[in-house]
Amino acid sequence: MAERPFELYDLKVEVVAGDGPMICNHPEGAYFMVEGENLVFSGADRFPMFPLAAILPLLPAKQRVTDENDWMTTDTEVACPDPHCGGRFRIARLGRRRFTHAETTGLPEARGAPWWRKGGTRG
Image: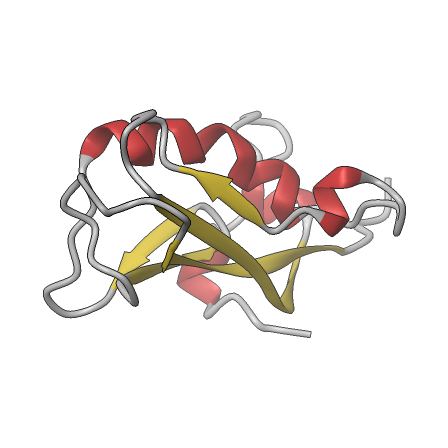
């Protein structure tokens, strides 16, 4: 079987102010990046674990190419799971990163060098 590359979006997840006061310890402007399977936090930015736990299940879907009318394409903000907190998280799609099956699989018979050892090129 020939290796055909596939692409995933890199993402930026940034804290933005919503309608109510910020209650949780995620300051406006704080962010992290998603590059392949990695969460990359900047400097001293911090995120409480409960909002992070709520965001994590959405990230693999946001990385994938979706139909232009799919809500996963159009809806970019997620509310903090604390109903009293006005914090929101904006998930922005950035450039695409190219992968192959062999670089990303755990299947022993199909495994190659992991993408992160090759530099994970962006398309």
